[in-house]
Image 1 (cartoon, rainbow, N blue to C red):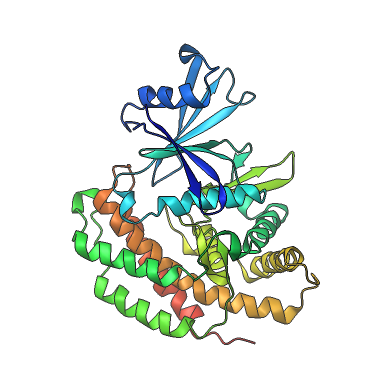
Image 2 (cartoon, rainbow, N blue to C red):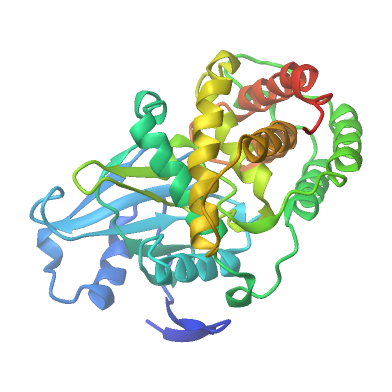
Length: 360
């Protein structure tokens, strides 16, 4: 087995193992990885638990003894054809930058079709925890901390939103219509002509809104937040989409995720009261980590609220295109076409409410 070490744009070097893990029978490949990463673990003692929350990749926890008490190493096997729209080098760079700042787990290595990294202890967030003030304020503060990481550590700091949307649209157009059998309910696919028209209208509208460009997670759904009640902390996981982007987009995308994934329910979008409390906690954190007075005014919260509402719209189109791509290529058991249509409809419902908002 070949072992390589790569420099990573000013971060610490990255270990790469020339191993391919079969997504159907992963144990043999995982044991090869653990022979290098955990040589003290006896192969016959190693247990592997599959986690089922993800809808892009396969994630497995590897341990000896107890999953709850013992050390755990995570192995993520990339989803089929995700290399078409994922920048895996950028993802690993984000892993190392966020770990350096105490915001994420340690990356142990990459391998041919995935990565190995540190297990973050805690519980995966659910819809109930997401709405608890003590928890959502932790999320707001953690996002404020991440948004304060400066661009000097990561190179290019241009917003990734519009280039990534164009990339997704191009891939969907070139891949053709998703196969109808991938949708259990045989729902129709969103119309690409309408998506293109809406994208152009939104880009023209949003480029006039002065939302700061910051380091964003860009995919903060509930399953990407780990809550540790004993420590009173949250940590964000999965950095496949992490990159510099508009501040209001990252927050708006998170608010959209209150509606869920398996059954998107737009009535679960957070109330104005919750948003204002969340945004106040966020701005206090963002200011503090940027070394300025953390006092937050009502006008600042109102201004950010309007920006977030508007940028939340484009996130629907992003995930709609993503789901159309996944419907074509993914082997994971999830109705991507139904999800694409749900986000398409969610977009038009919220557009009526948000598009015409005026900044204070």
